[in-house]
Length: 158
Image (cartoon, rainbow, N blue to C red; front, side, top):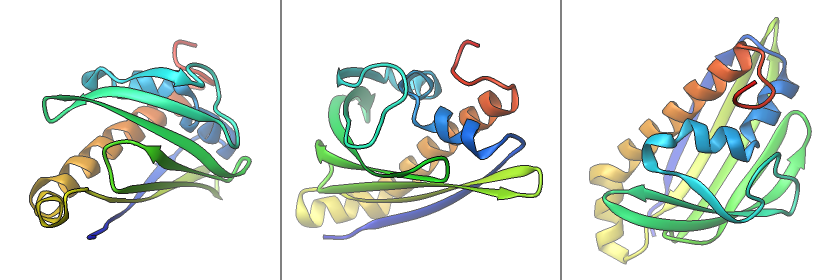
């Protein structure tokens, strides 16, 4: 099984606690990935997801409607949380979120790892398009989190 490893850094002019809460907000997640038709369909479906809670996401990727259930497996407010796929399209998915104070800014760091299913076909997908697709998806999400946090919103729509 191949594993895609991504590490993304986003500087945000807002306190870590605000960035942390927006990053675990179901509503902010839906708003940030609206272009995929993302919606929460089971588990925690709105508000701030907590340690050991799950959410099942439904969205359209690669022309397919996909469902994925993730669980918050680790949390150290307001500096860290980790979500991991418990059911879904990946052979494995783990997304760690770090929030560190850097002067007057927060450095938001994402460490994202996933592996496609289907053996050699999955490894080919990882190489040819999945890594690029996931990088773009996470970058889009992070830009949205940055906009919300810097606007002073605790939740989208505020």
